[in-house]
Image (cartoon, rainbow, N blue to C red; front, side, top):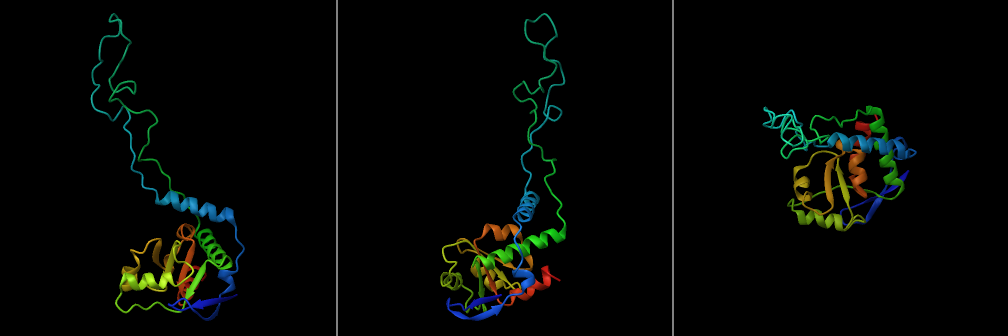
Length: 209
């Protein structure tokens, strides 16, 4: 598959042949959805926790005698019927939401997303990214020169580059990641995927071999 390569000024520099085994895979929406749901569940932070009647304070003594008071019988102020009592069927922090998905399925879904980005022209390839001073203004100018301007964009670098990461982390709707850390959820959350030409080798080495 032939695909255009842009320079930092947004002009097409040439073309590159994308490997078929990565960018020419039939899309399976059910598999991608399954992986996305599992990743969202695994990232979930379990914070809410309601105490049961066994965990709240007080209630060691029966509030009043069983009969003869004219009031309803009660055995403990820990009862969910009482203010300050335990909560019935409340959220618990011991509930497990994690879902285990085989590694081959995760990789297959990722390759499907990469192929879908390429087929829908939402994949942008740069020949290189070079910043003189490492300023956010420089990185924002590069993004504004490309079709992904004013749209959500994920930039995938072949290797970690501190200067580029610092320059791009405050750009609106733009995130930067190593190509080896790409995942289905990030690709779904960004309309465009912007990669440096050398990132294709990293993707091929990490996810296909």
